[in-house]
Amino acid sequence: IDRGLDRAGVASAAIVGVSFGGLIALRYAATRPARTTSLVLVSTPAPAMTLSTEQARYVAYPRLALPMFALRGAQRLAPEVWAAHETWVSRARAALAHSVHVASAPSSPVRMAAWVQAWRETDLADDCRHVISPTLVITGEAGLDRVVPVASTLEYVKLIAGARHVTLPRTGHMGLMLRPEAFAEAVSTFI
Image 1: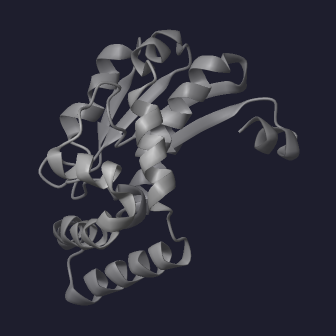
Image 2: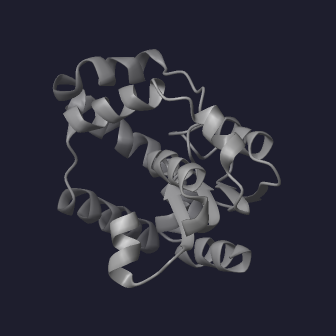
């Protein structure tokens, strides 16, 4: 993040982290307060979130679990696409756009498992105590986020002094992609 800001010639900026990227944004804000003007955490797992049995299997056997992980991802996304879009055509377009995005940026199951393990070994609750930037926590609706429970993300409102919360209606974990205008409005209004 430092290199990116330096290349852009920017001394400080609003740092936005989505899902697991929120953990990285949190760490950055805690360790680089002078470079963080504000922090936005979006559907980010809580510092002490425990893995489900299914998630633990993904971490233990990342390559073997990839097909099931992909299938479950599609199953988790379907209700959210349905809620975010009102017509069959717009739903199909959103699902196709997301599929193209995922296919164009393939993930590494081994790296993902290593990141999860590193997260579990880091005291992110302590990082929360060191965040001094204004902080916004964004979630979707509790019944639609099937990746990170909303209650988990809401822990940041308690852990970071002065943190505020906004819910994006008609979306869950994928609000950034499924309701980009609402997401952009929430972030830009806060910043």
